[in-house]
Amino acid sequence: MKLLAAILLLVNSTIFALWLMNAQYLFSFWGVVVWVTSIIVGILVYKRLIGSTTLLKRVLIASNYLMIFLFALTIAIQFITSSMP
Image (cartoon, rainbow, N blue to C red; front, side, top):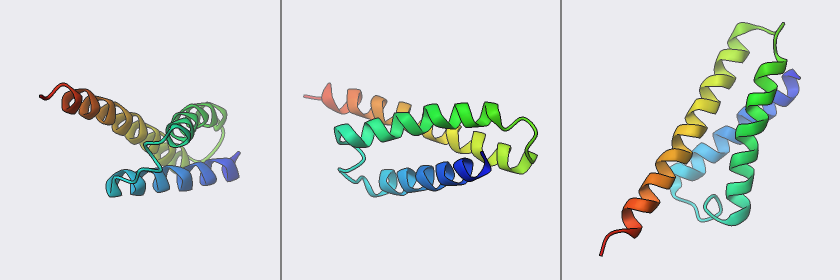
């Protein structure tokens, strides 16, 4: 489970970098699918890391919260910019 958590942190870091670069890969259909899947898998892995070190759990939950915040912010930006004349 620790290996999966480490891979998930790498995926979330990549998503964060792509979000900062405003890369079209992230905002394509498959990019959004990977983004949402990483959030769901992150929540499931966090729940399974009961006996693990607290640092890994804290970093993982912080990464998940960041992904959720960025996703919500992206949706808000999309709605705001699409409603402009």
